[in-house]
Length: 520
Image (cartoon, rainbow, N blue to C red):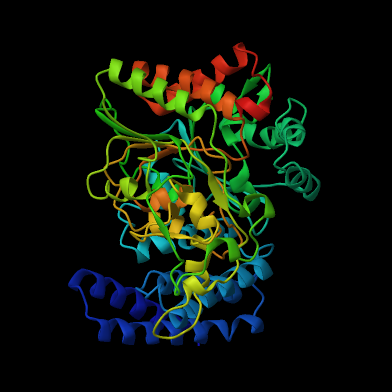
């Protein structure tokens, strides 16, 4: 039985590699997926018969997880609900079986890390944007230098998985249930709760106590969390003496540490920028009746009553974008500024394929409850895709958006509402930095099985943007304007977003905005 499992696994590995290299056609991919199904089912049917702590059980569990990870690397039509059921089942089964055996499985930290990468890499692989992504913890360890560390937060066990160069396995550090609960309670969109979470004696200071022994000889940290841990600013974790993690380390917060060493960073000077701000959410051409095949936004279930009538202008946005435009032009950056009724959804779409170095989007964002809507029904199968539904429930607002909220459409078909799903269809790979002074723009629906926060920031990364400056909670319009002034002054001086961000945070503290609500 064990020999048969190994043979099937070896076949799947070789066949997957052959098909990738030789550009196999759809029929052969289908047959390969059938073989993957049989391999996974064969191994899974035997997991309940063995103890994961035993030599035989350990080998069987490791083979099972390897086979699922390989199956997830095969191509799927992510817009077909039947395909969605297949890969969702792989993800769910992998998580359930790991949860069952995670306390007893030898080498479980290796499995935990590799499973996390497989989940987080899934959509990037399926959209053809997974080049350079690491497939395993050992590949990440090889990419790290002696003074670097990669950290994934394992959501299935509440632990930190830390990888450094030369490690023979990721080091696991458990986050106890009391600390986990305290962090969860602090994730409210409210200033006092935020201040308590990031306080010098708050829950995150205890998280630092757990991390500190592993980071003594480290200068650069690559860190990624999912589910509730994706809602944290790890760089703002207090480490004592009035300092934060970013004050001592070069912190790179990532969607996934699979991107470590993927070669996306560039130290070249910024040359071009496009800015959106001071947007008129009322004016945008002539309105007509809503299209019969598109449900008006004001009828969408789960829409808060506070925004059914539309959004108010951001008072400081006009001044902010004018100042940023002036700072960039003084540094010889060629800028294009869209304000008022000209700050349209179409202007964003038209950047596709030739995006500037910097995109600044000073506007309102939205993130609704992930409900299934008629707008996400597939025409062929008449069934609803959860993946598309989630991404259609968040986005950014542009000129004339209020008319769409009230159930009207513009004559040209654009509603001024750029959803995350629509944003992902643009090619913004030329953009090195997207700046989003938008409330909660870093967040997204995080109850999906990949653990990724499906929202605006995720959509921008999928569209090819290299780095994103975004917010974890609702932010003050005036304080954000002050922050942007500091940030861009240092950006045109230092040329690196990370250095500019660190200095801007220091400037905010010195200017009296020392509350974590502002500085974190």
